[in-house]
Image (cartoon, rainbow, N blue to C red):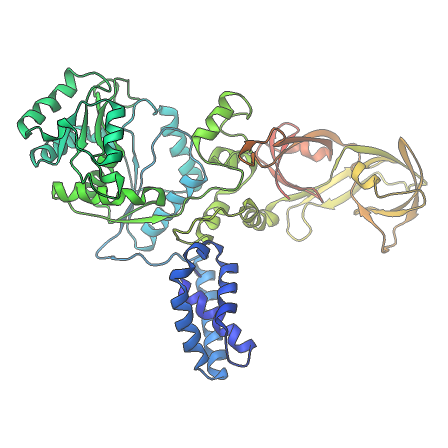
Amino acid sequence: MNDIDEIIRSITLKNAIEHQGKARIDSVISKLIGIKPEIRNDIKNIIGNVKTIVNDVNNLTIEEQRRQFEKLNKLYEEKKEEKGYILPPLPNVKDSVITRFPPEPNGYPHIGHAKAAIINEEYAKMYKGKLILRFDDTNPLKERIEYYDAILSGLNWLEVKPDLIKNTSDDMKMLYDYAKILIKNDGAYVCKCKQEEIKENRRLGIACKCRGRDIDRTMIEWDKMFNEYKENQAILRFKGDLSSDNTTMRDPTLFRIIDAEHPKQGKRYRVWPTYDFAAPIEDSIDNVTHAMRSKEYELRNDLYYAILDRLGLRKPLVIEFSRLEFDGMPVSKRMLKPLIEAKKVQGWDDPRLPTLLALKRRGILPSSIREFVLSLGFTKADTKPPFTKLEAINRKILDPISIRLFFVKDPIKMKIDDMPSMISIRLKNHPDKDLGYREIKLDNELYISSDDLCNLKIGDEIRLLELFNVKIDSIDGIIHAKYTGNELKQIPRIQWVSKGVEINVLVAKQLYLDNKFNENSLEVIKGYAEEYVDRLENGSRVQFVRFGFCILDEARKFILTHK
């Protein structure tokens, strides 16, 4: 239920029913923030709606309040059952909806990219429209083929299926044509000032000498950018509004010279457009109806529309949403790349990172990411949801499909006297689902976790899970215990491993603490697991009982997905 008014009404009706038909505004607001914490920064704009709805509900009879509450809840459950989470309707929908996801291939995709791709695809599907994947590849200094491939691989894993895939760099000649049109309309000029001077002039809102050149002279300067001027010697700037409070409009750069080989275009071009110039034109000619992007671009909307106005092109509707990242797990390449280069993390798939490769390796399911993204709703309010929320969704999906196995960390040997002559025991792989069985060979020696030993003393009776009861006789390096029967009692229950194999489990912890790299962000836990683990294929998911969900990374090495 992502429609805020529906949520407010539901909360208000429930509050009124609980208080003799009279809901309180402060109680409704408090409950609303608890359900949707991301609206906290936008609460001033919502209070009016809350007051109106509270007043309306309080004028109803209690019987009508109950009837509306039941109806609203039934409608919500039907919607949830049908589609899971519902995105709010898009404004200004006419004949069709075309969205686009325009990543720059300058790194590996992360959870923030997943949010943008999923939202754009969901809206395209909602209106039976189209999704365009457009690589914003106009900076050859940063782009690599491996990044194109990584983005495609990540989207394929997320099951995001674009209707069209294209590269901005394939439209260079068209973008040059539009640059010439802009120049001829006196909307752009070539600037040869030093970078420091340009920066200071923009800060002060001062025009430089280059701005006053006539159109013919500007066209000559433009041509020289292709074959005469060197890097940083000349740029094409937009003729904006130097007095604007929005500094983005103070004559920003539209084209610059970059002498570098492009991964797709080779050395065919040396004059490259900025995102500010290419994005609005590409969106317009691709017939994008709703251009959704994260809100850090919000101040660039004036420029986006100004360029389209000057060129006389159709204007898509730009809509912003909040960025997605987790506390202590930044998505910025500026923070992640140095860690990889310094080998403080294993690579872009290190399970501590928020990249799609890392989340996949950690055992997070793509369906969990989609549900998680949609559960956050569509809002501009800043929020950093806890990683535990994604874990909770993933746990719900993993639980019925993961086999249960025993694992003991830091194992301690236990010898059992008077043990019945049992050769093996047959255990279900899942307590509720039909995931098969496994046979465990037994003798009078097994292992328990040292964590469990800490809670034991001589004379204690415990139950070995799915096995029998024993009484602790002595603890001296090895635990000696005595078989005491199979009667179910109110005694501690612990897990065990017989004839186990040694495994390592990688446990990812918070990558950054107080904006500093956490040197202890990856723990390796050693222990014994059932022999059954040697029959698993890489990528298999299991739940180690009373330890957590894990994924097999390679032979006898697991990664903890989450508890």
